[in-house]
Amino acid sequence: MPAPIFCSWVSHLMPSFRAARWLSGGHLQTLYSPLFRSALSLPRQRERLTLRDGDFLDLDWLGLPDHETPCVILLHGLTGSSSSRYMLGQQQALALQGWQSVAVNWRGCSGTPNRLARGYHSGVSEDLAEVVDVLSARRPTQPLAAVGYSLGGNVLLKYLGEQGSASPLMAAAAVSVPFRLDHSAERISQGMSQIYQARFLRDLRRYMANKRHQFAINGDPDEYAKLLDLESLKGMKTLWDFDERVTAPLHGYASASDYYQRCSSLYFLSSIRVPTLIVQSQDDPFVYPHSAPSPSDLPAAVKLEYHPKGGHVGFIEGAPWSPVYYLERRLPEWLSASWLDAKKCATCA
Image 1: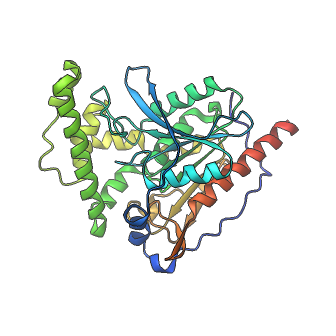
Image 2: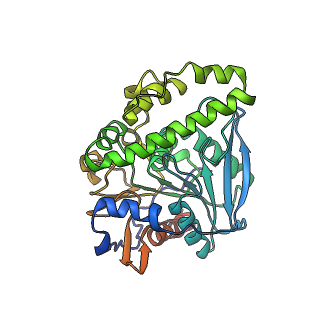
Image 3: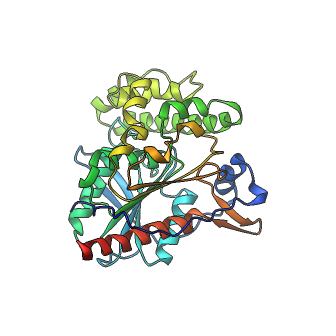
């Protein structure tokens, strides 16, 4: 079922984010949660979803299906998983609202190497489309929404632009989006941001090394040959190097530059017709301020919430002894308001 037309009279709760004074810089906002936030223990159920190409995605469900309330699809960032702190926190917040959610692990990110040589990247909107199609077919009357973080946010916005008004999602939200992948590859190689790049490269090398090891033992010989054809992982100093040597050749792109050009969400925003909130910060150590679109360049369905502070998937408020995670308040508010607006539009259509 196509997404409802976005009503021009729609009204949403106003944001009120104030960065914690003790986490005043972008790096502190970025690092606090992964380093110091305790992992939540949630009663999730795992499903292995087989894809059309024979590969799989592991989905972690929280909450029981309810045809009267939405289900929210959550998409993690680079080298993350469904167990990333921001994913768990958002699932808990949605559960407290009485909504079901499903956290998607991109290919190979659930702890088990995927079956094919290919993996995931910032443009895998076809995998998201397959998840959405499967869930829509299972429960055609249950509203669907989606939230993407960083890489997952880029994938989500690309998908929404490709689908236009045909997307069955009733609402979406994207956080800390690398709108221009080439810009972010450059930004993360500068100054203190290089610490993140070093960690990403370490994790990506491990991801590829584990896959090669598993394929050597019991993998498909043809798929293993594709991994062996790749250039050496040694000597890589930047994410651009990884995308040039691994991401591009494994996923059908001529080069890293070709991949960045074809998968950057900035080029898909104008076609989005689903009500979508984008939450960004100007002190994001992964994204240049000038990479973000101007609000005047966005379609009516897209709202850009651009904060002076917040870091990358940070947005932490409150006191040191009681931190508050703004995204776990703001995103459920947005999705709930969008759902109510969609129902109003349906009654007045």
